[in-house]
Amino acid sequence: MKSVVLVVDDNEINRLNLKLLLKDGYEVLEAGDLAQAEEQLAAHRVDLVVLDLALPPEPDNPDIGMRYLEQLHEDNPDVPVVVVTGHEQRKLAVRAKRAGAIGFFGKPFDPDEVRAAIDAAMEARARQVREQELARLAEGQGGRELLGESPAMQALRAMMAQVAGAPSTVLIRGETGSGKELVARLLHAASPRAEGPFIAINCAALDERRLESDMFGHEKGAFPGASRRKLGWLERASGGTLFLDEVAALPAGVQGKLLRVLEHGTFSRLGGDAELATDVRLICSSRKPLERLVEEGAFRDDLYYLINVVRIDVPPLREHAEDIPLLARHVLARKALLCNKAVEDFSDEAMEQLMRYAWPGNVRELENVIERAVVLADGPRIERIPALEGPGGRARPEDLLQDWLDRLPEEGVNAERLLDEVERRLVLTALKRNGQVKVRAGRWLGFGERAKDKMRYLCDKYGIQPGETES
Image (cartoon, rainbow, N blue to C red; front, side):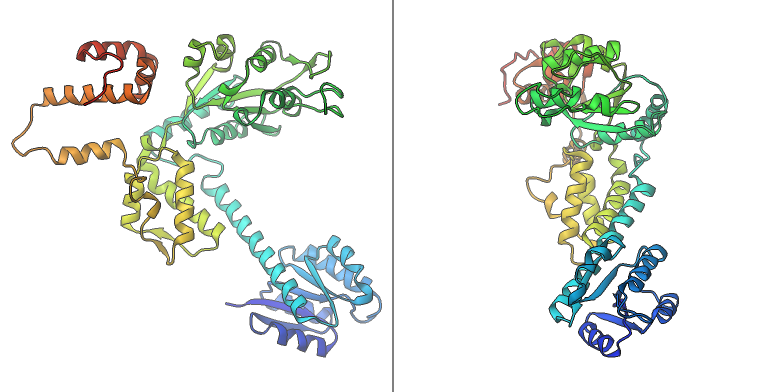
């Protein structure tokens, strides 16, 4: 269906010329005065208005057209307007844009200029519609909630509901791409601080000087290049929430100053002596095990205890794979809108690919893979997902295990011996992938706080010495 353009111009020849210029790409309606324009707007769906500012009863007074432009913008804010001006009136274009016009072209008409202005206005409008629809989808289908009905996601939401209203600091643990920042934002939105600011910082993305300056602020002349006073995150986030993503990357000096903030609620800007108070709720996240960094002396133990008052673990996608169909279809709807593609669903084969993949990059990787599939799709369904084919399309461990079990001999097996051999090989693989360090290997196997003792037991059980590899 063609987009509809309403041409408002009292000159019949001008209207005819514009209609001829636009007839191939648009349906064109005409209005010779403001009353006719209102009738057309009331009777038809109009996607864009082309408005000549020289309108009766005073065609030499552009204020009439300008006032109508303002009225159009107020009454029909979703309908873009392109204005037409004479050469001597080009300066009115700036004023018209302030009044709501999205573009302009001059008289006499230059066909290329006319089409460029109208096409650009239509593209801008299409982007706006897609953004609004994306916002609507995000609001209603997961942009402000965690999708998933699995036990893992239900437990996560229950934990968040308990924590949101408390003033306590929170440590969010989870793998890259699992949704740690979304959890932090939702905690803020459900807290008494929801009307205050939410500031999110990736600590791993900044060097020590920049990180310290940005967090605490600085006074003029505090260091070369500090030409004026700068407020830091602790001041800007006061009354709200400060989210420190990848807090493990904080340098030692910044860790000490942050400890002071948590203990006393005060800090000083770089280059300043004044004690400043801040009222922020601190939420931190880390994909690295802070306990190990504390053991290694890379992270202060006293700071660790203060930021780990409440801990929330965000499960990796592979641990709630039953949510993949719901998540995938939600992502598909957003990406199809973003890419302006009429892709509505997945084939059974494509969904099977999504279900079998291990998702080391979690939900973030799921979004990227689906966006790529949408861009390459040439029909209403995603038939298959090339990104998950070949060596990169790793299956989940439980799927690989099932494939192996399906190939066991019909006459049966010695279960006890087989289970011991699986366990032994898992221990060897874990050690190999983690530099022969038992504690790291144990955490890789999911033993958590029991990693050290559990790995010692397993290595003794199977006579494994660090450095031994599978033949």
